[in-house]
Length: 367
Image (cartoon, rainbow, N blue to C red; front, side):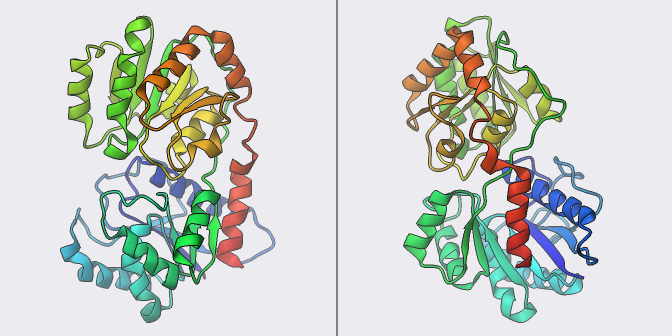
């Protein structure tokens, strides 16, 4: 039996990477359950370096196994050789044929095992080529993957071209976007709602510090409106202090991790993203699926492939606080414009169809 393993830092986290990885793994299981053309159903699993939470934030199909390299959180490059050794034992014990690194930095642990175990390595890069967040040797790992991986998956065509132009990879580079899920039951956009939402991990990358600056130019002019930030992270205390200092703590609220994102998407009037950089942000695809008007920094990469500027959302230059506040204020002041953006939210959604994307993954895994 073929065994495909998705390799994660911690699959129990609530981030977009974990969300889309679980979505793809679940969809693969479902597709093989429905596939009558083959009698061999592959095993699907998740391997995490460790799991900090007792249960995953996103639901994993019961048919998917979970394994951990370490029984408790273990950080640091000083554990590198032990990590490689432990991972090799897992791959051999569970007869893993293909391992999908759901963060390119994880290639550093899997690529040394190709020759020893025969495992195929697919590097699935969720950051764009120009970003090396938090890990200075990510650039080296990308070069290593370009020469040794069996395939590299990027989230956008723009990123695929960057890989091919700068690294001249010996393996195929395939652009497969994140999928967009259609909400059920179908919703009716509420143009009368006075609620803005944003979501994501509270980290430097996501730019919530700049979001507070934007909100300080929006909310005092609209005392009836609220703005909710859904998610947690290491910047939560700093952000709370900044919100209090801006005297908007009665309108801009840090909600932490919420169990039901759909509840908030259905009640929102618009979605705002102020990331410094992205790969292809799942939160924008979710907002799009819920037909929300979007205001977003045009950061590299992703937002411009999701939002049609002036049609179903507004793109502003990364870091432009004034322009972003102006766009949000304009939408608040014009329910008809919000309704028009919502009506066109799905105009360019076909390429993000889960069926289309699943077919691309199956072709990659079984060609």
